Image (cartoon, rainbow, N blue to C red; front, side, top):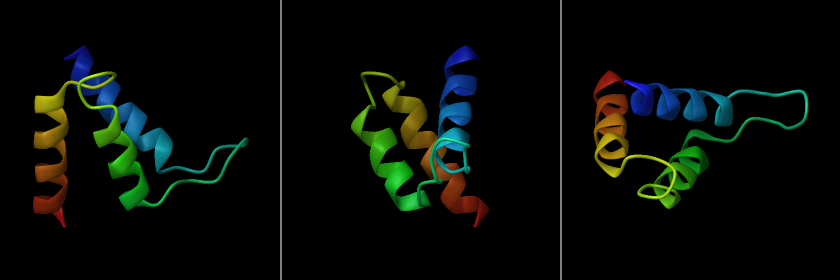
Length: 57
């Protein structure tokens, strides 16, 4: 559960405006997440996460 929560929170942080930076586009956030897949994020969860995002559109 913590790996799922970490991934969702990180993606939300990247795609939301922050006082110290503007939000990333969804495409840039996806590239950044994939870049750190297997390092910072569970690669199986990353794959499933983006599949579910696509289905929800």
